[in-house]
Length: 97
Picture 1 (cartoon, rainbow, N blue to C red):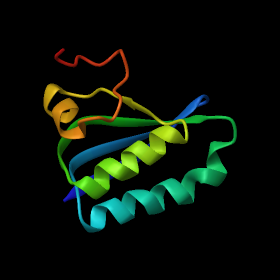
Picture 2 (tube, rainbow, N blue to C red):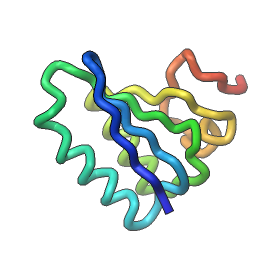
Picture 3 (tube, helix red, strand yellow):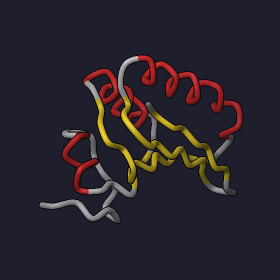
Picture 4 (cartoon, rainbow, N blue to C red):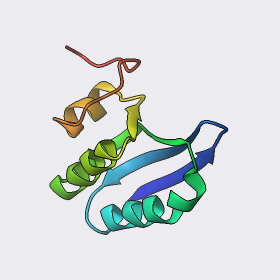
């Protein structure tokens, strides 16, 4: 199960992911991304993965695609950083080196 919460601010749209990003939840996150494109204007997407507990290959591909479009990944716990593998994690996150 995955909880997806969107929080709007003046300069970004934060998407909080809590739980496991896999299976049908990957498509749901993609729908959230598509549905919020018109709301973005000049704001960027920030993916908050602090409470991400799992991710499958399709989930990693979607997160990587979102990053290629300019989304930033923030608040990665050490577990989330390992789960995301090659996805870049924002410097502000506490990621083991």
